[in-house]
Length: 140
Image 1 (cartoon, rainbow, N blue to C red):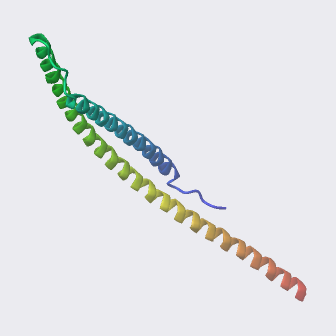
Image 2: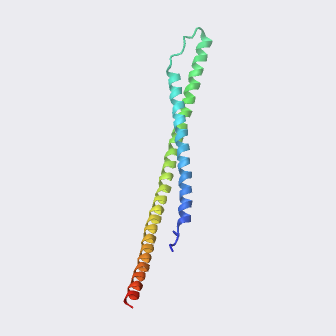
Image 3: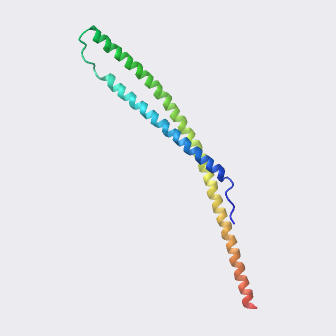
């Protein structure tokens, strides 16, 4: 009879933690990519030369729009930097938890190999005992 792996509960918990860390990493990557995309779109919009201003009010409105756009770009750059930091943190957390899971999985695999070897040894002993009994019966 094989013994169960004593750390199987911990392995299940670590696997759940690893999936949660992978989800956080995925979410952080998506958010960082979306911010980078918005930043590229805004840069493209700001790089387009504006229409010729027909009067002073149009020129002032164009200047105000460009200032607002540059302010938004600065905000997006700051947000992107924060999200890249969060992405790195999530990546590190995922790698750390994944390492723990792999270690426990290796222990579980080694345990399974040992238990299988013990099972086979017990089976072989039983077969040897049966063979010895048959030899004794044959001699009698």
